Length: 458
Ligand code: SF4
Image (cartoon, rainbow, N blue to C red; front, side, top):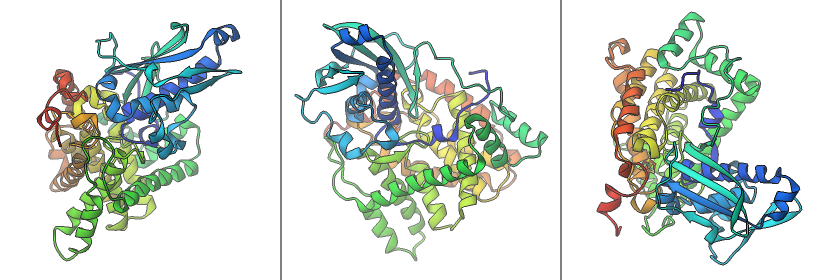
């Protein structure tokens, strides 16, 4: 366990960027962009000598990077594109022509980046993280400068040598590492959860409260735009599976069944599938906490806004509760499918969604904790085995299932006395970490087992 207080910003957890994968698309794009900035700072003599860039992808980035668009993402980052402002259509067009060479500007000159310079390495690589990418600036095929990065899930990256570097927690007014400590801070300082989270965010980012609130609203707007696009878009998703989009069908079905008790569930399914299908198509989504799981919270917040008619302030409160749960899992286990299997992605998203619903409903922190605990408990051991390496099967439906479980976790946690819940959130996160450690790597975003083997010709 990391022994310093949590220093993650809500805007690092909820990030806007292109699908389909935060660890395989957004993370590598950010790493490539960082490498670009570093090679631009190199001494003139090294830049003059260099004539190409080579990229080596290891672990799960190699195993499922093709289906996740990792090659396009590193090209985009090396061209200076950033996830939040990337045009998804332009991103999808990269590498379409295998003969294209991309000129990477480093100062006055350019160096070549060709499709054959991106290597999906099958050999085992000694690395502390499952998703590793090495960039080399080369001269005559020999490296003159290189950097190694780890994509640790949710679009977060770490550069080799900075594995333990964390933003300073010195100015945090209410530090915590666990739910137990968080609840203690709330009691000692007589704060609401949103007051505490906002104060910490202001200290971490230096932003005023008004700007933070506006950005949370903006993040929800991005989520809901993805839902609305997905409800409109029809046809087949990219890739060899030829999976047809289903969200518009469900939406129409729900609208025709408003008197039926099924309609509520069908609407929720439609919203979650809509955002997930947009993610699979490489559209702009919000990591929540990852791109693979970017349908759960958008689906639930869309439902809360349009069916429960919660106002913006209530939705923001719920987002803080969801963020608190995401922070705790990221800090004490992992939100990466390559480290934890799908329980790290959909399991975490479902727990965050359960916390969102519970806090929006005005329930106390004990109920929020119980809901999040139930959300994780019933995803323990869930493997990650996407067919063909595409974030489609089981990922898209899994988002809808994660949201439905979140809703039921909210119902279960708010019935009776939350204090009677036997398992704490901290305890289940520990179990999640241990389960992830014991899980075979075949089930951690490599597409080497499970569903990925059972249905090769969908
Ligand atoms: S199975 Fe789960 S963890 Fe794996 S890629 Fe799909 S959503 Fe992500």
